[in-house]
Image 1 (spheres, helix red, strand yellow):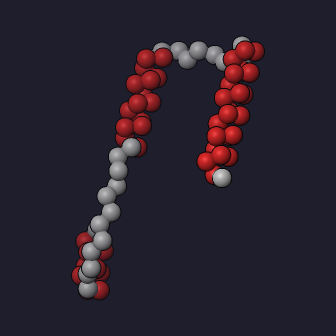
Image 2 (cartoon, rainbow, N blue to C red; image 1 turned 90 degrees about the horizontal axis):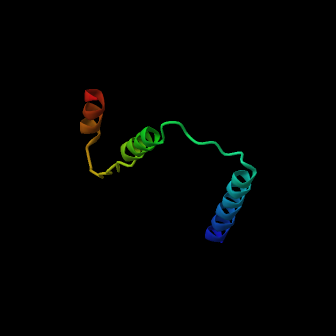
Length: 69
């Protein structure tokens, strides 16, 4: 059910973009290549995955680790 709603939302967005394009409301971005490079850099930086690790510690070790950082 969630996937169906997502498709409907995406279709609505596409329709709105098409209407705006047809009305001439969309404007070109100056320095397109630089903007694309900037956007790619942002996505690459935010796309780094965080690895999660589960370990068992005594309470004393845990407190010492917290204090160290």
